[in-house]
Length: 494
Image (tube, rainbow, N blue to C red; front, top):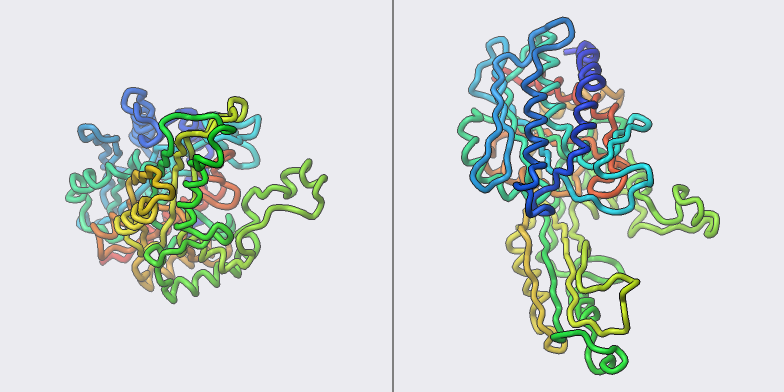
């Protein structure tokens, strides 16, 4: 169908209905349970679920009274002791049948606040500026349920045929989706024969064309604890005799990656890169060029005038400036990060004391095809084996999540996505892996091994998911909604 016919409906929905709802959503500190142990008592996750469900149930039709979402059922499902989910089911239209279905996925839980927001912005303070909605969560991934149901409703309002659509919107994704298997077991029998999975929780290389995610890295990690004393002691008295717990931790990290290059050392954390993914990385590198690394807020770049004036021509540099290598580094190669620490006093209270303990929060992205459970086991062995100075070393692993490598895309779907991108943006679709982790994808790959996948999203340059100044690019999200409508309309009848 001609996507231009859907533009008035979808533009109206986004401008007059979805954006105001997302503004309200940003205000709610619905942190994922991994960052809010009292999430149930605080009620924020339940609040955003109720808000999204209320919006969905209030969609009677489009401009002019055209029928939309007829026969939809939507419920909030909450298993005992688990975070809630939204499950919706919208029957097929024009006799396409109810056995075959399309499954939509998104999530409503959020990452924590993070520091470094602009003075006029904040995680729970929605601000619209230059077609961007700033604040935590709207792009990752609160917009998903609104975009999904709007893409369905637009077809209904236009009188176009479409398949049965079901949706699962969770509230545990940012904590590793550990509640999701129980819901899949409960709800999968109600989903029909899932032929296509549409996931809206991924990224885009730019805002100029459709980007299809071909793979996702896995994630392992945990807390490394190094104890050398039972209490802190005077550094003048003990240094040179008692080793620093931080130095011991640093030695242990050197077992994992090369401190000069960042290359992860053990083979178990690596995987062969498929030829198809190499070709796609080269094509994406040609499209993005230096933008693949210039998108990040490097110290000394033009966004920091004071530093730039003092250090003209100097700024921090990436690990590689080769666009293809940069793409492969963030999609098919492992990388270790230290994302937090404990046992380190703040600067204003750091006395001359040799500290008894250092704790570091470790996060390692692993290639899509590396098994997270095995990688976690090896990581623990490497860190705890033969501790320097016989210090007490313990690594407490977090929930690990294996990555995902998309199955071969059917020719009809590849051609359709390219056509829809050209209709919407005037440019072909682009294909690229993402560096983040969506545990749901690996789970769905196992539950629906014969399904096709369209994994995409709105997290493009500078959108800064999980960090300060996160934003949703409203025009791109609106255009992506039209593309999703086109995918539904273009599904084969059998």
